[in-house]
Length: 258
Image (cartoon, rainbow, N blue to C red; front, side, top):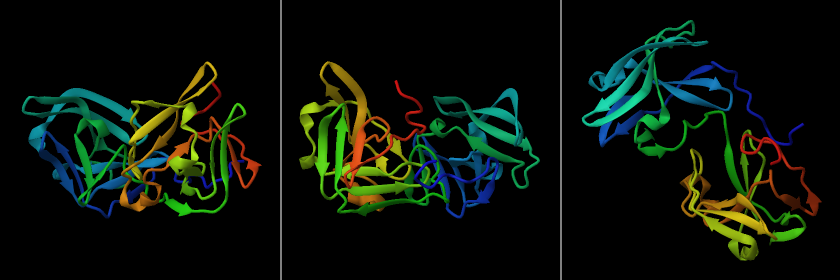
């Protein structure tokens, strides 16, 4: 049994999006709507489904191909703006057994350059309205080890509680032994925290464990308490909280031991 709240939204659940949604390609607005729908294609987070009337029709190019899903039959379209062409960018839901989805369009997230909720950019995927992400300061001591080597010891971590994921422990850099850490060029993004500013692998003897620590120097305003702090993947290191060793979780990031 996991020791953190799981995701409970069923697949194909639909809800209205109360926020203005826009997408931009090559500096021009592709879609602008206040009538989008959240659709959970899988339970972890939703996708935006956009009414066709709120999309610039001159940008969609039919690829004369249809697909079938549990949400109905879709026709595949490319997205073309001047010399910019994004094939297989959009799926127009022609007829759906799910109320309110017929005539909506689901875009591949990476087919456009940027997505916005109101006037704030959103990264990776839509934010789940049923998920919470809280950054709380704590005085529970945290120690991080790998193969018996102490990597960090912190008396005042910031704990990030995110629905569907184990607690992450963000530690001040002065409390980390960087002698075992190797900076990498990896960059990842999160719809709740923003874009990472640093990643580190861990060297123990001759073995390098790739990309097990990261930091957000400029997180979203909601997660400002983690700015500049470093976290480690619980799935691959030994974490002691209040002196108690935590069980390594299994998540979508690391499903099994390498």
